Length: 478
Image 1 (cartoon, rainbow, N blue to C red):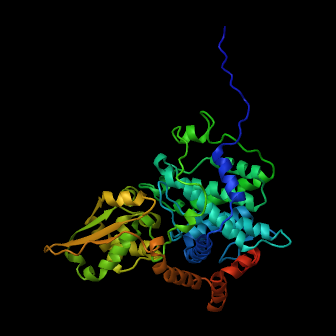
Image 2 (cartoon, rainbow, N blue to C red):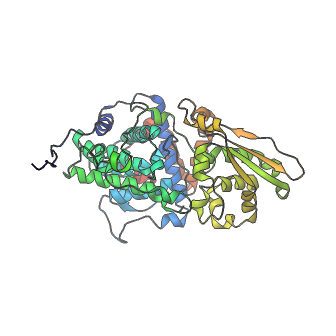
């Protein structure tokens, strides 16, 4: 008798992970004042990153319609530009602008990432909806979608390291954006589940464009690509495209078996407002976040060593395991994307110049021979305490220390900084500087009177929440 090898083709109920996301997006009521206020700050900061990125031609060349000269009636606006685009391309452009200079907010966990990357899809979808609804859509819906997208991305990242299997963290941008965008577009519970399932099975970016020896500019538009893909999947779902209930758990063919070694996701907490409340801002300089405290320590040392660069024997950077693994590099650095993910380069620039701006990653500054000279004198060592505290959910520190040793035996003190300026524990200290960062970025794109109108609206949360999205986007257009 021949053994039967056929299997049941009965479709299961949707994976619980998909259901939990959909129920959270559609049903969770946000009652955290801190989350609402932080969402406003994240929106303001992300828009500032857009305006600053528009000053860089390498970013600008990626923007605008896919086919030059094409128009989209009642299309979506891209902040700081004249573009009117379909929501998929608008999501790409906004997401790319926010992310381009590595200056937007950050989340560090087992998997790190930038939850404001989701804002590309959120703003494009909200603008699209607001232009089609007779009553429009208020900005409060944008803030709501932000809190929930941040939470989905951040909670998935807490215990699940996608980077350890070679996938880029933008997989979580695609998933979170698909969920909230489908809801913004009016999707049902089933449609949110279906869109999220589509996001999980969609094929995912390899992390290689962030890592040596391949680091390149794709890391600056990968999030725009992910959030725009989420909008595309949401629109397809709303047209009736079916979902895949066992996208994660299907034996052999599901995400868990194909890409996650057969493991299911681990969760530290239920979805709420934790991520938004604990988000990390990049306030003083555009540096990969694992290096923020190293740069801050180097800036503190700058007055002591700026006239003694030729006397330096060695520089010791004490760091966490994550920084050593991700951004510690020796040898040539080939482009700005390579440099802003090099711990030694960022520290050297801060020691030499006493500042670190986006311009310092450009070829003109990189040609300064003093930078590579200092890089060659650097020793990067891990402090196990730093690595432990980095993973502690109650501490969430991102510690670094820098110490300089001279040829004659002199040495500076060891400057240790555990929490970067944009950390929740330093929020009171950082807020005035975060507002100043936005004002400076705004001034690169708009004249003073126009900038003041935008600033006043963004600083008045009540008025901002009531403003209709399409009117807001028109205000930000060039």
